[in-house]
Image (tube, rainbow, N blue to C red; front, top):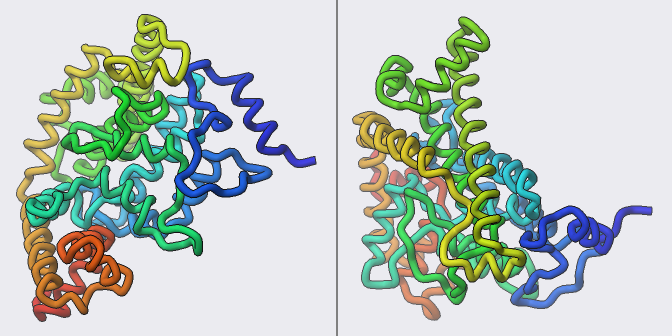
Length: 383
């Protein structure tokens, strides 16, 4: 006999911590649906995210480097998959709900604009008088409204806990915004894990991409980034001389392992000190419990500063991104003047939500290459 949803829910109660979010205790969905016989609510959510159009489009959205500039450079999709893997590992170590953690991680960038954070800032500026734009809130909008897959409702109708994790997802890149009715002081530990896994992933893998693009050098990292230098020394001590690619991979892997271990050990101590026993205790706690240690946080701030100075604002990355966001703004203004050019679903929202929001939704859902193609079509200028 196949394992049923009830058996899976009982297994969670037997194996997870008391403060983990049990799928059987979900606050449910906005639109009531029959329960699945074989999958928990969070497993079902994960599958809906993976099968969404917004998820597939992440393959052609910028992480740091414009999509298509290198075969091995991360895209928003590969970044998302890496975040999910790290998040799931941390959740497992802390006896949290892996399925919920993974789902939040997989969905956390569904609302990201083309051209990465530079594109996000441009859309926020263009929408200044019309509610602004912030990719975490847009991710919630994607799963609540913009995906059109089901006959009975808009969006994916995800569980309350996944939606909470999306609206409260903030990293060092992000700026807080309104929380759309999710008014507890904190989110679940699973959402907090997905949040920090994002930070672990982009710090480490952006370094890797910077090296691959030859914008960073190992010598410079050894001189300026403590976590890199310490990991490099340990790799050399334990494994001797290695080929370049293998050595870099070993160093990055060791850096990630060190961050994950620090988060698990620090979080375990913070949970014990806080005395939380239930998910409600977690949400009502004054501060997030999934944390780096102070020492590790200091090291990561050093690495972040280095990345901003030497990678994110480097001439090669900055020049390409500046051109890209300039054409994004031009396309935005063109659509405002020619609303018949935006997609049919977006046009239907004009009367209800206004021209600016309809155009913003349409552009936010685009891939990098589609914005470039639209710009070429409207202005006959090659990127």
